[in-house]
Length: 188
Length: 115
Image (cartoon, rainbow over all chains, first blue to last red; front, side, top):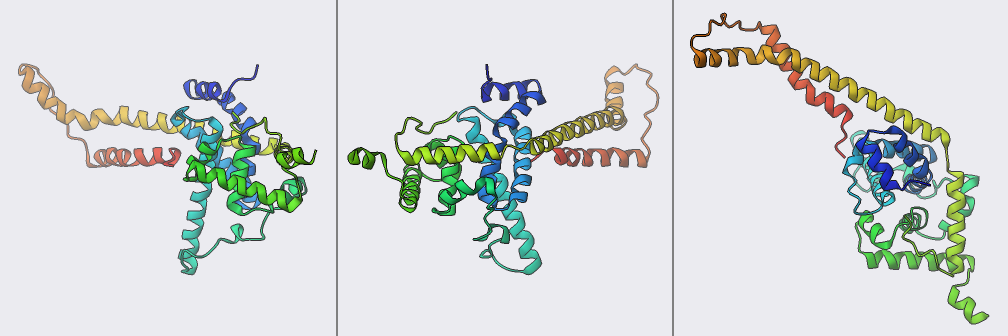
């Protein structure tokens, strides 16, 4: 039987068991990489940030308090790793160029989206919504997080997240002409 | 783990769920996982090395530093103890101890992340 994330964390922390952590890494690596790709919008950088996320997870594993899901804790950590990278990049650029906060790093600029063939389907779907909405959909669908958990991660209110996700889905629905359950029921 | 409503009959939910599932399958990367695990093991070895180093230094150098403080107190307390004269450590020993104490937190900071 597959061990739960929580049991594996307990094993990894209590016994300093790298094998338990290895199972966690294998289980969550695609989700974390997907989130970092949406955040960083650069496949190579996303891999580095994904690696950094798991290294920090290993260091901070004992601080996971089981109040929420491990997937949520990891997603929050991944976002922190990205934001930290962004701050560091901005600081370096400001020091080098002397430009202010308004500068958008090239690797997060519009149009630099990684359109690798394996992501084309998802890319097309997510292309219909804003960057912020993309992150919410990734956290909701790929990480399986609830609106409350997502709200905690992005520092927003649960109701706001719910309506943002709804709005994003409506955009996709309209863009690709996908019917709603209610519409289908009426049609049938 | 999943807190999302998986019983939804909305066709869009189905489309999104399938697209995400396909992407997650494609993003599975054994090479990346190996890189992560190598990093974890390397860090664990480094942490162990630092712990051994710092503990060893502390065990060797602490008596040198604390000796001159403890010895007179013990001598006063027991009075009759015929302790040898307290040897004041040489300047370079004190310097080495000071450097070790200053470096210890820095060495730990190398492997301890403040995030």
